Image (cartoon, rainbow, N blue to C red; front, side):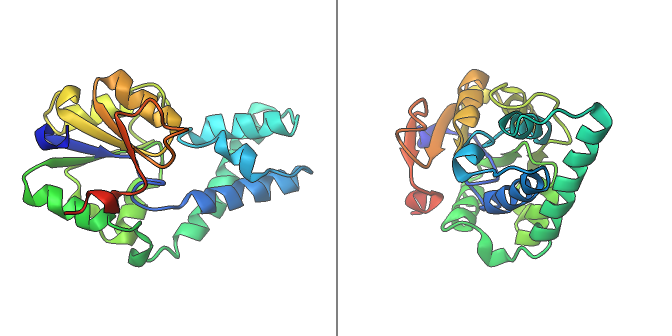
Length: 211
């Protein structure tokens, strides 16, 4: 499967870098200000989901109802706190094997795109000093539909000048795996075989693919 790919499309969080912990801390902080606890189990529901949808889920968990203006203010407040965390990101926080694998793909002439719901993707890639390894970046600023909708991966394929069927998607979230399959791509799941059972195959991390 990987031998025939012309393009590789990577999710960001949990695949290239783990900033999920910073998202969790920021959501947890917001929940506490609203008077309830947001747990690690609750956080699983937010994996691969857009900021707006994540906030809807969080408010549902806390049985909190707000008008649109307050909702927007909460979303911005959470993002500001998250951005403060990621400003301190260091290049060594790249997940094991990720940079080496990206470099190997480039050396083979395989095109590389990012396909992420994050609106801070470019900023994060710059902080990690790997932005130059990507031919295209499709993030939350360029798509309107959240995974499992395939929009982000279809757009990423098109931006590489490729058909989705010639691309392999690398994802750590169930919604992302579903989005990759819906786009018509093969999908490598990164994480648990139990959770990512719809992926074509599953690995623990990109370091397993470094050769």
